[in-house]
Length: 210
Image 1 (spheres, rainbow, N blue to C red):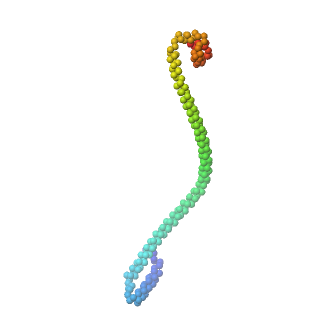
Image 2: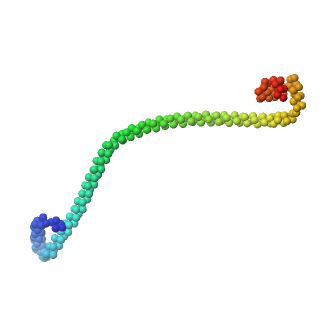
């Protein structure tokens, strides 16, 4: 019953009879040829039946396992097919979104290219401005150096003039004012004073300032 052989018991009985008969004939032939007796006992016959039932049980279990695997495989295939169909539907629905994404990406690339071109132009302009600024700085540095050189040359004379001014007194100024026409160097100095004070560069104005 466990093996499910009830429907074919009559056929199995006939096969068993054929096996028993052919085995007996083979034993007689074996004795005739080799003079060696082989006995067919109920135990041997039962062991043969047990071997056949064990083999049938093993094969049935093996087939059951394979059938189970095939069923699971078929189920997985059905599930996969359903997933693929669903993905196909989803992709069809997403197609407009994908196309729009492509258009947006293409537009973004165009805008990025434009921005990149503008950035390159600005970078070129910055390089030109930087060069101009560098040239201006170099020129300013040259002017500074020249001014410093001239200042270094003028400072000794300036300090000398300060000392000379410190040595002047009221009597010396009155003496200068008494001149109807001052000496050349004195006139140059006084004209410079008038210029600094915003007065006319004349001897009369210079005397008023003194």
